[in-house]
Length: 170
Image 1 (cartoon, rainbow, N blue to C red):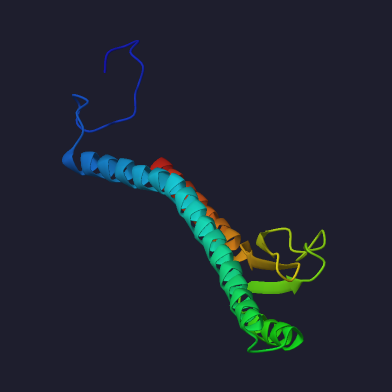
Image 2: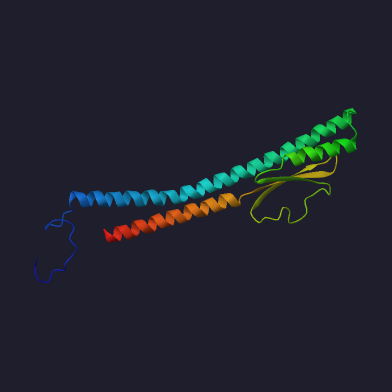
């Protein structure tokens, strides 16, 4: 070593060239880091797509319920059933659509009350049904999607942190 020259960490042999093993290790770390960094925006795109799909399903559920009401109203118009009976059957049919992460209700005051359904992370669609002065409201929770994204974000952060620590140690 020449006097006065700073001592740098050894990257390989005395000429400063990297050994094949070190090159492979660096390429592996760079590749893993790149994959993890690419996963972060992909997770947000996945989250957006899942929430958008849940919104679409809530809208389809509300539209299905309104179709039930339209069919019952057509039966009333043809004289096949009394209006009170049709409304009672429609309520039962719409209640049967409830389940899982989705909730659907009929409101006779022409609009859902403020704060319905009460969950801060709920996707809501409401459709009017003018012949009876009702409103069909459907809601679907997105909290499960948010929880899954949080778990994936924490996993990515742990993997990135682990990669940094291993990169420093080796």
